[in-house]
Image (cartoon, rainbow over all chains, first blue to last red; front, side, top):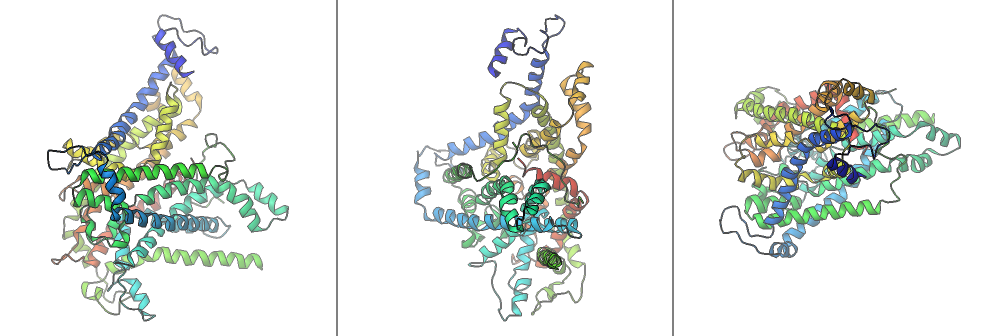
Length: 344
Length: 274
């Protein structure tokens, strides 16, 4: 069908063959039929993005792929191909494997925890209670804080001498915990990540508000307990929203460089200040690029991470078939304005 | 009775969570009001005994705070305006026009929304370095001009739902598509424009990693300078000054959010709809 339109355009026979509803555009004054002009306009409107995608996304990725087969260091002019040498090193370097494992553990903890907590909060602020608009707004507020601001705030709370956390623990005679170094730094990072749980809450809340009220009402009339209607109606209808959070959560978490912001010297080359328990994969990438100048090896690391993210995303899509329940085709779903304020 | 106790459980859970979630803001403000001797006090002071605003003047003067704020503001405004216009432009094409290959291009657009951003950033930085665009604002101009997939999607959703008659009347009058977009569709889409401006502005204002890679110390943004700038001669961070600087950096964003929360939230929750 679409190639047919192209041939029509090339042959200059107009669109009469494929669209019987429109009269053949044979008037000599008209330069091109409406449909062809619309097609041209489509390319005019979308070409800036396509160029941007090719130049600012596709090309850099390809450039990194090329670098990953070389021994480039960003300085010396005699860069040469080393074949798969960098990739061999990725899989034999214990530091790489450890950082990958740490990132995986962090993801396995924070993503499910964040989704669960977000869902719980969404259910709570969806109850018919007073001032729920205020609760929604204030619970979401931390998610608006820029990452640097959030990291600095948590550094102050968990400061060994002047932080509130140790001040609180003092009451229980626990003194001077060094939160920002091993082995506690990972817990501070998890708490920092959980501070933005409002993101998940808002997305789950939007999903909850989309559930037809009649369904839940009917279930109650039929004698379903609150838990039954939650697990049999709400949860299945919410599954696309949860699925979305799983995918974006994992993608975001695997490439997080938040430990850098939490470290003592938060600069791309200052990765040496990151405590070992927070030495994630992306931190390792920064270290190889900006502290060691090993562009080739670091690019191989990036591509390994990219491949892992692609495979994980693909697997989630595959495994979730049957578990994710679309009541309406997403394309057909009418988007309606959603607000955090009280809609009662 | 059971309804009542259920409701009070909800309140208790919510208030408890809220206290926990808002307490970091409280500690930030308290720390910002302490002088350095009080900061070191043991046991710690839960409330500053001599609250003073000296940290704020120090935060403003220890480095050229307003200068770096201006850098942030320039980059964020430049990016927000360009990316909003460019995203509306592309969103219109995806919403209202048909052409061979549209499905494929739209599919690529949707998958780039999933593409890990930090992974492409480092090679992009190397590319900009080769093109001598490091230490200029050109990367943000280019990022802006190509539009953001997520915002394109937002505009596309909005334009798709606008009535067909709008366009048909204009076509009868002999309007081209560019004029239809510019004169008819864009002026009607101010809610999305506002959402897009706010979202892109706050992304850029909060972004740390792109300016840290692309700009040197003199030209960098407030986010980067804030993370590293407040240290004493021994390289130790001055907690109370950091707190004051962070308050001044975070409060405008929170205020913008609280004023414009409707647009903000509708934009964010639409991303969960896909």
